[in-house]
Length: 452
Image (tube, rainbow, N blue to C red; front, top):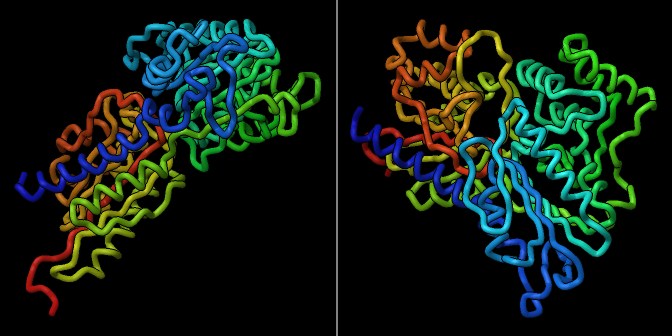
């Protein structure tokens, strides 16, 4: 690889690292939660709580919950009467005043069931005058599998697998999860026995809807049993999900099972939710870093959705349009986009939405000089792999073995193998944050005499 190639790749790494630093969950906690009155009052979200009045309990779940818990321990220390946090395997950190467990993601396991049970027990221990602090980041839905009455872990696993494979959006996946759970859709807040609830939330969903992030355990739920049936029917998997799950949703739609707590429910008068970190913040930090590197940064969107391979092709088409406007001597342009795409599985390969985007972008950029990019999950894990995503440039397809080989990789959803072959895989390890995905495309001005 050339010196220029390596320089561009290093710049992409720096841009991605700046985005991650801006949404570090521990810093997000300290930005939004403060002590006052000599350390006797806790302030967040425009509200305050007397720490001497009742007990403070903490629960947390998600890929970024560990650093959030550490930051809260540093702030509150012995004020924490009881605490428990569950994270994805490999994302744990040491805690002094709370317990921590690990569980599976994205398909829940028995450890997640036990974690959800512990979280609900802590909520049930609360009483009026107490404060329950809930630390929530992306991944919490799977990590706190709480099968509703009549359901088993196997029912949740099978339903989750079908939803992940059919191309459903995270909004749709979580709507169904909430109605098969005893914890999502505001049910954690309802379990707190009249205690005040403070949710500190890192968003991993497009639009930052609090009812969707982590399946909204502390937020009112506007979705319904009937909408869940519509989602499953639209993706043609209603008859494939386990019968107990289907029967519960049908019973709920018929009014035989109570709905999740809805907007306007008085219980949410004692709930304060604080949105602590978002994809937009990551994009803005990436743009600032690109500017510091001498580029013109353009944020295209923080609401990227759609089929991964199609979205990648559209982003490359936009980059090529920008390239056509540049002249020798112009600054390079960094195009930035964030959000969360979906992958409809057609083959049995290994990969994730970011790796699939990188592979599709590679095909669109074959032999197109002057454009390079990175597609990465901010959580450091893309699909069921140990990769965060991948790099791409004009030579990626050749390094994969040529266009025919690259196309075959795409048809099999085998983007991981394609990127390994090209030497384009991005591996970061656990980042312990999660604000969806980030794409950056660097568009260079052509070489030659500068314009007068």
